[in-house]
Image (tube, rainbow, N blue to C red; front, top):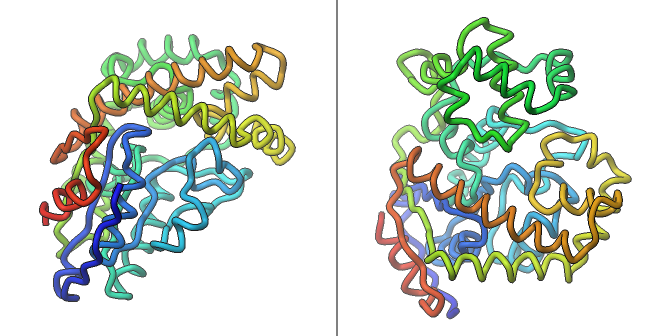
Length: 323
């Protein structure tokens, strides 16, 4: 793809704009965000629950050192594996990043695939109860089936909507119910409502431009398969082996990262490497499908479908024209 030309808008325009690029894994978000940053004088804020961790490099497709010299990136390598990270921490760090970026007369460009973080930043967090360490440990030790059964009994609305293959989200829902004695779904609606006390982001007076990137199913599948094969070729297994020595298995959030969990299972002898590679491809395709469904239901995005031979200039021009 051709490199886009650089454009430096007046500072008055810069301070009134903020771009959000969302979409499924492997769709091309990072490349488009980088080109857009070069075109309009922007800096990128990663909206990724895994790229925030130091050491999770290959499996999270972090931008390379060369890419980070082309545009400044934020919320990458911000946490150690021993630290926890959630939507509240993301909003806190993202607000600080926006202020820092705008203080330099640059444009914030949010880019990633963690939908909950987009929603929390744009709509507010509200007064969700803080995590309880002892209760969290108790719930994490329970079988997922038992947690789902409890959730179905105490809050059927959340049970019907939640990603039942994501233990972290199931644990959090049950945790909130036990801490408050109220259905998670009812409270979540209140937290998202600024009138009910929700904490808004730091975008007062700023016009957010929300763009969703998509691809035709076979095109995205081919890109996912190619990315997974490239990750293994670059040393994903050795990276996971090294991270296990630095606490990967103890970080419940990081262990949910696509690729790492399956590779750790391989390292523990649960399946051979070829089967692991294929499993990561399947899991990634399934994840991309869930991402698309979530984004279309939860965020009001202006969708752009990318095609394999489309020029970068045309794509970035369309994104920039949203302003």
